[in-house]
Length: 113
Image (tube, rainbow, N blue to C red; front, side):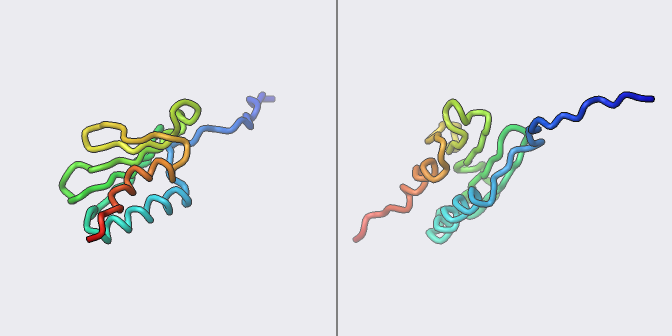
């Protein structure tokens, strides 16, 4: 008779972090508006072990203008969402994605002639 180890029913951490459908909807809505203005042209999505990244490019061959990052481990500290500029500067960090994306929506506001 062999003894089986007990089955752990504790929630397992996912193998990789990813954006859910609602988060991607918010990001792609902003992305679509900026593409319509001609500001952005390409994007890339990376799902890694501890971070999910949505990278925004002006041209395909360049480095990303902005990175929208989701780091669930920072949920209790600074907030799990962040917008990072091309030079690595964190433009905004917070608990809610909509509030963090507002830093990028400022580019949509233009003076009326």
